[in-house]
Image (cartoon, rainbow, N blue to C red; front, side):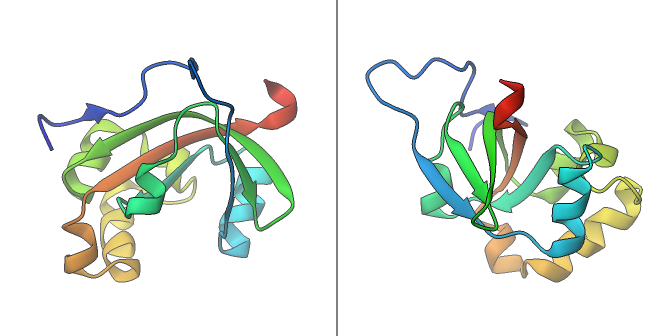
Length: 127
């Protein structure tokens, strides 16, 4: 990956294709923060299937809550992601210093080595 942050998607434009819908499973406590409007950035490692997502695609959170992807930004690792993203939008009750070990507990080093993605979302009805 080049640079500190590589914008995978720069705009909502999806010339030549219709938005895709993907189900994304989120732990209940984080889902509740999203639904309450407290969390609007989801962090994932750069698995191949997640890398195919684009701005404008629809995420069906836990199979029932439609959200639109506003942007996806790729980083080489969680440290770079947390230097460039607002931690309070990822985990409203934690500081960046608390969030880094929590992310590394979820994703072992070989997963983090794939890269880290910040996926900004908003409710589909708010489009």
